[in-house]
Length: 172
Image 1 (cartoon, helix red, strand yellow):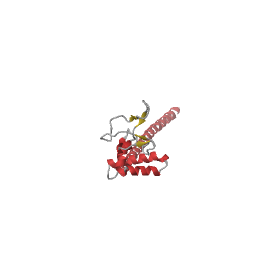
Image 2: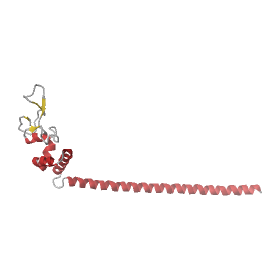
Image 3: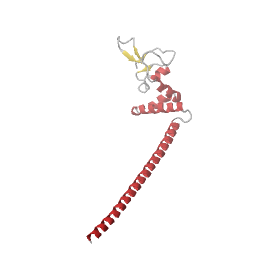
Image 4: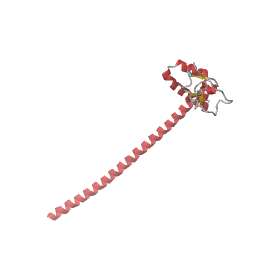
C-alpha cells in the first residue's frame, strides 16, 4: 500500500491546496491530498482508504457531521459489511440522517418526515377545498346558463304563439 504523506496543520481545515506535490515523484506530478475523513481525523490517507470515495476533501462537513453521530469506526464497519454497489447510498443516508440529527437532536429524520407529512396533509386539504370551490362555481354557471336558456325558450314560445295567432287571424 502506498501512503500519501502530508503535514497536518493546527486545525482540521487547512487553507492550503488539497493537491500536494510528493517529493518522491518527478516535478509537476500532483498527488491528491487526504480525503475529507482522513483530513478531519488527521491521519494518513492511503490509496485503499475506504472513506475516500465518499468523503472528498472539498466537503469536510459531510464527514464531520457523520462522525459526530456515528463515529468513524462505525462508519467504516458499516461500509465494510455492504457490497461496493450500495456504499454510496449508505453514506448518503448516513450523512442525511446525521445532518437531520444535528438540526433536530430529539427527532432527527423523524421530525423532518413528520413536518413534511403535516405539510402534505395541509396541501391536500387546500387542494380539496379548491376543487370543491371549482365544482360550486361550475354548478352555479350551469344553473345560470339553464335559467338563460329557459328565459329564451319562454320568450321564443310567447313570440311563436303571437305569430301563430296573428297569422291565423290575418288569413280569415
